[in-house]
Every structure is written in C-alpha cells, then in structure tokens.
Length: 463
Image (cartoon, rainbow, N blue to C red):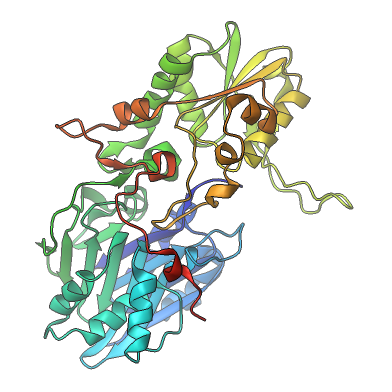
C-alpha cells in the first residue's frame, strides 16, 4: 500500500553461538522495514561468509543457508519494499562484502548518505569500480582509500567524509562495529543477549531473539565489539543538533517498539488525544481507526472527543486471483457494515501520503453504509518525499501537494471533510529541546531539511 515506509532494518549479533540464526530471527521482526531483499554475513573468527537473496526472510534464509553461515558474530539487513520496484533511493542500502589488504569486511547501511552520489563520482574518478548502488559500497571504498592504520580508524576517517541520516553495521573476522549518525536521524538499539550482545533498528527485534534491550546508541556513537568481549563506546564525530525522524512515532516503527526512548503506542495515543483537541469531529460520530498505527491513534482520539470507538475496518487476505479486466489497486481491508451503517464516521489515520489507501478505505466505508465520512490525520500534511532513506512517494505524488485546499483534498479522497494535526501539535507530543527548538526531523511535513541535499546535477544516474 501507499505511504512512507523505512526501507532497511538492521540486526547484528556478537558473542553468541549460531549468530546467523539469531540475526535471521531478528530480521523476521523487522520486515515492516524491508521485505524485498535479505542478506546475512557471519564470521567464525577466521572467515566471513555471506548469503543474500530476494524475498522474505523465511524464503531466503532457510536452515540449509543458515547452516552455511557458522560463527559467533553476524550482521544482517532487510531492504526495500516488495510492493514497488527498486529505485535509486532504496538501492542506497544493502549488505556489501569485500576483501581488503588486512582481511575481509562486510558492511550495511540503514538510511542514506546525503552526499553519497558525489562521493561515488569522486571515487570513480580516482579509479574505484562499483558493482552496486549501495551506500555501504561507497563506505568500503572510502575505508580502503584511508591512510589510517587500523580498521576502526579507517572507518572513522571514512565516516567523517559522509553526511546524512544513517546507521552502519560492519563485520570483520574478529569484530562487529555499529555506528549511528551524529544527528541521530535513524534508530539503533543495543541489547544484552546472554553472554553476548545484539544491536537492531528496533528493540522489538531484540526482544524477539531473547535479548534484553539496554539503551539506544547515542547520536554519533560508535560501538566496537571484539570477539566475545563487551562493547567499547567511542564518540569520534563532531556533535550536531539532534534530528531524529518524527515519522517513527507516527507510523514507521512497530506498535510494540520503543523509538528514540519513546514508547510508540503511548506516543500514538497521545497524538490521537492532541488531534482531538485541535480538530475534533461532528457530534454523535463513531470513530474508526485505519488498521495499523491508525487504530492506536484512534483510541486517543476517541478518548479526547468522548465518542464511541468501533472496529469498522479489518485486514483481509489478498485474493489469489483478480477479476478479469479489474485494474483497481487492491485495498487490504474490508469494512464491517454493522459498525458503520447509518453512522457519521470519523476515520483516524496516521498520515495521508498519495491518498490511494485512504481513499480506498473511504470507499469501503461508503459501501458499508456510512452516512458521512470525516478524515482526521494525526500528522501535518505530507508535502515532501524523504531524502534520508525512508521509502516514500515523490513530492508530486503526495495528495496534499496535488490538492492543497482541504475541500479539494476531501473530494480527492471521497470524504466529506479532512483535517490534520498541526506542526505545533506534533512537536508538543514528540517533545522539544529545553530551548524550545524542535529536536526531530519533520522535513516530510515542513520542508525544513536538517541535512543539506545534494545539488540536482549530483542526482544523475551513474550507470
């Protein structure tokens, strides 16, 4: 379906037997962050081995493949969205393996190097050959060209040259290294796993493998885990203003996750309560949450307006075949007529992207007999695509860009009215710094970029 979806999830494990099996299990819990490609690299202390493929984790990493990945350290990634073809931005992630003069190394990047295209061009001009569009390959070329002596120093030297919102996992024969960018745009969490350690994009993946989440990596922090030892923390980068992705709280992170030290379910309930204060709804309405994040937000909204919350939409299995000549985009829900028939319905959604999914839900509610439908979104209008590695439509594809007036947008979506949470309301729930300045990246809503994008000419294809 439509919407903003993170296009990469990372898991790393060190000091644990059958580490690749543990990583694969953790990646199962991150498939909402990537469902097109999977890759895992493992180390037995002497040799790195890699397996990757296209599809879901269960299809790519069966028992035969995992048996071929022995060792007590491993890193892995899920990438891309299965419901759309790969594009340049989604191709900026991936698990990359390389030999260099001191051994072997595997690396993966969640997010995006904002200056990655320029760096790739400069590296090519100096003789580097690229086999993928992955930012991880850019990183490994920078590591190879560094004049520093140790791998850690070479990695620091390389990361000093990049900018963007990213997390990095690196695996060598005897160490696992995790890095979070200095602004902390992307999430990365550390957990204790028996006598070993694990890191992941969400604490849900850590809990799934039996690890105890301990803390989020700080912006600009580098963790080094050698063998079965404890993590060593260093802060080698210049401090920057925090700019964590606020969309994690809106609908990127899983409901049971903790994102940037905020409980996601609690944050979404608070967004619903704030939305109720700001935008309200017609009297005697019933409240319906869009399945997923919208359901939790709807709980807070219903509390705020003191209206009845009903389950008006439920997930439906995808049909094995379509009707002849039917080109309508599949809507993955069905409506419950007994809940909405002859009622004024407020449909609570986390955000409105292209509008196709929301319009489909509105159509289902109309068919089920809803008297009127009023959309309330728990975020400001989305007007900009994400330049920092989150899979998103282009700015021109977004509904709020195509229909700037609320009346035109309501007609586009098939609703009677549509309204949004304000930017002030979003930041009031997410939290501000002590000096009252935002500490979140909200560029998809406001257009205020915490990290300068590359010049347009740097976006030209390279192959």
